[in-house]
Length: 134
Image (cartoon, rainbow, N blue to C red):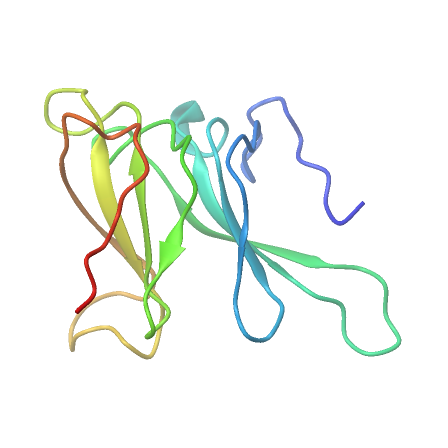
């Protein structure tokens, strides 16, 4: 087992229903549909253990607040700069869900906080998002 979530709505999330994606260093990224702030879900990273170690390290990258989305139940996708994209089932302006972009430190525009989230309304937020990359 790599990580055990609290499943009680803890700060690190609960109910990870979507699949994981991996980066080139072997870190895994995913979402929890519950837990975090107000039980709205989280985006997390699991970093592999250092050589000679056995424990993976969990980092919560973002905790949804409801107004920016709630209940991410679809998997994440990533671009070539490391930004993560996903959808939430609920939350946002009309509580119909959001499409979000989570930007990692190092690729953010000047003046933006690390691991900020950009969200927009989406009527089909529970469906997997496809990017048309030319």
